[in-house]
Image (cartoon, rainbow, N blue to C red; front, side, top):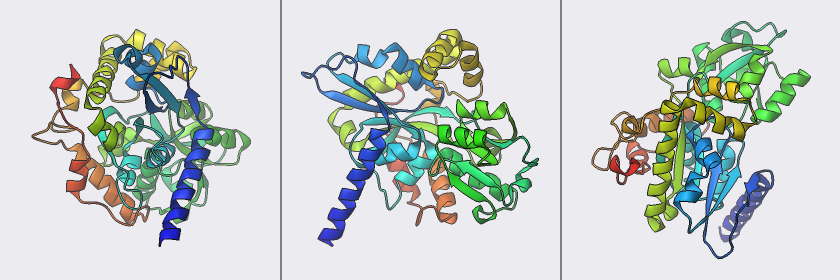
Length: 344
């Protein structure tokens, strides 16, 4: 047993090293005399990118180094959390539901909702494949990033058409790799998110979006999570992080031009493209975020726990995880300390 555990730990460390070796880590302004807060981010348009671009976290926490590391998917963020390589991170609700379940059992909590997926995630069929509907995917090569919200949504979409994963040829590809495979003609359809999904739409047909799946009872979200150990040791930092994230949400709603400029700078798109992309997701107000439908408060945890539990039950039914944890386990995984007042 001891040797098995050691091998597992060694394999995890190796996996984390491989993941981080492929990530972009921003070391700018690093001061060796300060402690470092390690933040995982992804390039889907959100308030998180506004926070990063405008250096609001750095300005609010001058006593710390802020190390931003770019990841391509929630599965990679989960691996980094398991290896204790990051403290705060952005990832989708499906990877979180999976991360809180066995065998991962990642000790983190959901502290923020970055967005509710809308048209910013979609399943697109390549022009020339003859695919006109979900039913046309039978026997086709369909790519998605495994263990992501897009993977979860793809499984739900297949189910709507009476298809199982065995009825298609699933390919595990990160967004940029799926775009390259699409351009080579190696895949017939892709379920992914912005900004890649917009590039696919230029030469393909949208079969279904995450907005449609949400209306049918399978919503997905992008979440901000925090390591339990970090939250316990630095609750003041978590409070500050939530405040600047809430500022990001307000900027999207109240100053869309400023929001688009920041997102464009982080994603390498034009301001017009960033403006259009920000319209495709659903961004909650800070007041909604702390309401009963979402995170809730310390005395009344919100319905997000039920959303995550439902996602885990779906993943278990699809044999993606052994079993779903209890609803209470997901309620315990909501970090609602100080809500709603802490959001400013």
